[in-house]
Image (spheres, rainbow, N blue to C red):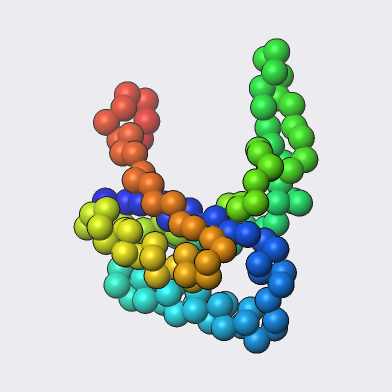
Length: 124
């Protein structure tokens, strides 16, 4: 089963890190990523640029309208993701708990199953 592990983080916590702390967390991410690649569970993953680079699109009166910034003001923002393929929700939750931001005390990881739309007409 495929799952998205959505990493929410408090950007100010990252900004407050010393270079040594940043390197330690960065190394932990590298180790985690390597482990799930080696286990065959990794499909994709990446970090996202800061919310100051975000653009939100809404359709109003049939026309797309763009605004700078994220959809909503919040302390925790989507900072990155992993897409994994593992046996069940328990394993996906276990992996989510190994993501460094989950253990920093300033972030969280949302685990969400990916819908299989392969049986929908017109979708391949």
